[in-house]
Length: 173
Figure 1 (cartoon, one colour):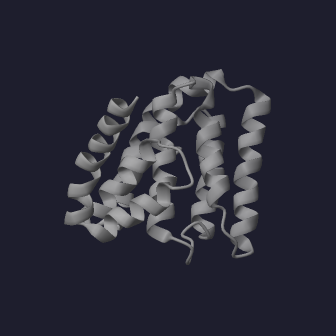
Figure 2: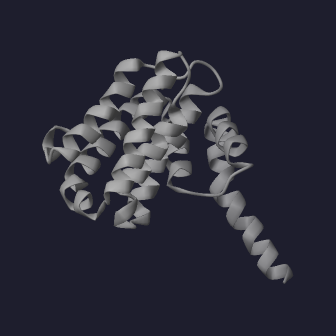
């Protein structure tokens, strides 16, 4: 058992020490951010953004990737939705618009909207990529002002579900 513990400690040091020395502030953000949560794809993306020093650029790039993935999968996922599941997604969009009108954050509803939209695919890799966007956004935005208060962004989600229900998969995103 001691050999196993020594190997684990050596591995941890081999991975963490060079990063902690090269970018102590970024490493500390990564360490504190992950202290209370499990590992996921978002951890890797968030730490990468901190280490490069351009987290807002990484958020923008990840948004482009997320939109491309979502758009490419709409035609595949929509036949899997029931009227009830589409109604639940529409309700999330409606709640987002209500919160935006009140100047309140709808970030968790936004995440729930996108995860619900693609849940019928049962694709854990896709869920990880989608989740990584909000993980990184949380790191970049922190406890300060929230980007998810813009009424236009909230309204876009209603437009997404409108386009989907109309069978217009190309104009949803």
